[in-house]
Length: 308
Ligand code: PMV
Image (cartoon, rainbow, N blue to C red; front, side, top):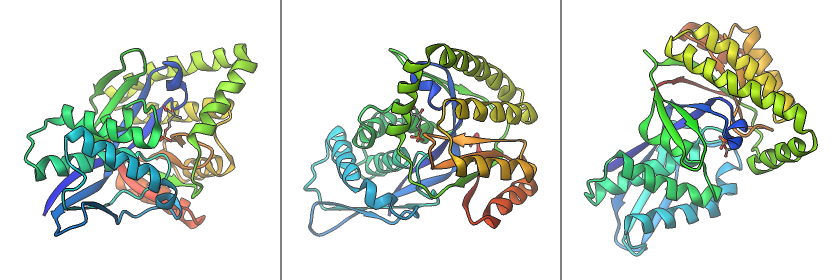
């Protein structure tokens, strides 16, 4: 059977601020989506989605998924009448904020590339995955599919030409991602920030400047593998995200739970208003303690790593 893999992602610094061209830092995580492709007798291209997911997630994204697959096939020059079965699986638990759509686009592109022996390199796979992401997001920034395709940590700045720079981490670090179980509406969260920013320009300008400075400090701390400093900056980043009102009660509670259980830092991740938070927990022992504290409160967690 022919397979292709795409990693999930975690925004470590500056979701939302990134929309306003402020640098952000994103990491691929150890969990991934796997696509397998096999020939069938009839029926054209069929997609079977066996990924583990938050209830309601797959149903809510079905139309987007169809559009995304159509775009991927078109970008790869594959006829939708080809008799193929694509099956999605893997370890990535799909919910808002882990880059599930990008991971699936990358996995599908890689698997089809192998199946048809197209010889595409990572840059081409990334471009195809970006096309697929348009089915979900309209105008994606491109950061999710980059993390999904290339792996590792990425310094990302949105601009007329987006900047992607790899950040080297000496070794992967354990994290716990806690899922609030609420399917978040990123579009609404982004629109809310815009509204408030227009209403309170001075206040927001001040917060945004802090976020800009924080991104540079975080890059330095990551490059020095100074996990304590990285954690401290994640805590500060969470406060800034609270200031722009994209966190919520569940996210704040999970962040507090993680910190109390010993996480060196914790913050919401992704669009907010539900979805995921992330706790930095170097070492398997700390990771387990923090994961357990959140699970004890009835929340589902992902034990994974950044910098893979
Ligand atoms: O919810 P996610 O993981 O797709 O992240 C959204 C990140 C935002 O900064 C809020 C929006 C964006 O387009 O960058």
